[in-house]
Image: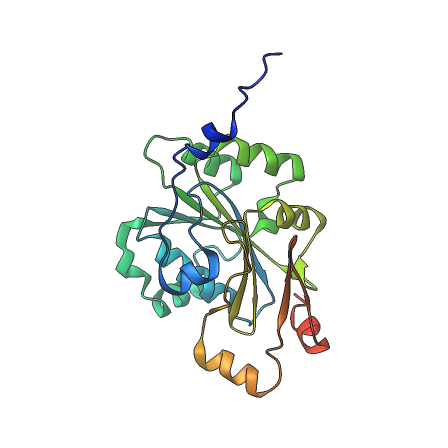
Length: 234
């Protein structure tokens, strides 16, 4: 078997790795991430996860075209309302919405020349990917940014495979009480929470539901109160 090339530290340091030049709250939360890799976003229903995904998709459309594969909700009324609420028509054709396109077809689409640089897959549980499937999928698309949306189970993504993806991902984002808590490999310290909805986050704070979340080196792991633990059940 032919061995892959080995590099010196200087050669790695001189590599020009494409990055997203985030600014403002996105920079504070995630940093300046590589244009390729894997992100995973999870959170309980009613905590702002869908709104965060739309806000993120709209922001990423400033940099490149984005695929949103709606495996779970399809193109029904719920998605339509979310698109209208976040004025997603403003991004025009930079956002490509797929109606439950199977992973095999999505892969074929991503392999085409000039295909969108970002693919949001909603949700991981509906993708049907096993751990070997996931690893092979990401290895076949090293220059794409693959963002998986996941159900939550406690403080982590739901299911054994999704939990493995959490540890493998470059950016891990837990949505809770209308804030997105990010752990990024592109920042030396955990990022600032991204506020999804000011009014909802403020209300949660006054009701004692917005407790600090501890971000460990291996990802978003624990909160300081039982309220937070109960709030993350899917």
